[in-house]
Image 1 (cartoon, rainbow, N blue to C red):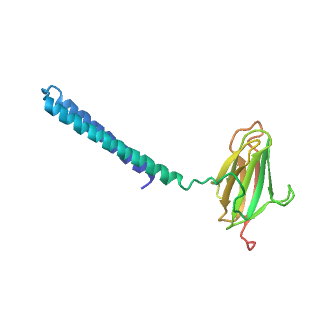
Image 2: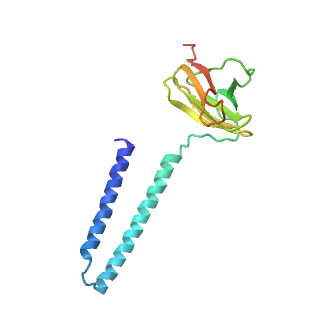
Length: 189
């Protein structure tokens, strides 16, 4: 079952419970109130609210840990443990990508199966750095900001021609701000 269907089921059950609560309250309108019964209802109501609060708090903490403990953005201080490092500079309206230790402007070739560290920055304005896989889906993306290096770590699993596009409107030349690079298998295939 996809997450959206699960959320729908949870929302419908919640709405049903709220509706039942309203129906119960409406059915009790006009009945004489017994002071002892009211105190008992208030105590039970307080226990239910406390129980519900604890359940929601535990659910929030569990969901937060479950979704954030493997946060996909690596630490930004210090070098990452990658065998390939690519420096990326975005500027209106081009990308300059170079493997560390090689002169800028050389053709970029990366290999599958080993992590690649992209150090992304901008020479002028904010850009959105996105790598599109050969099948057209976004493989990974981050922001390119002036004066700051964003580091992302990605391991290519499929060879092919990958495309880099800007995801943040950066001026008149935003749309054609595209470059490509090849990813090959380590054996050259």
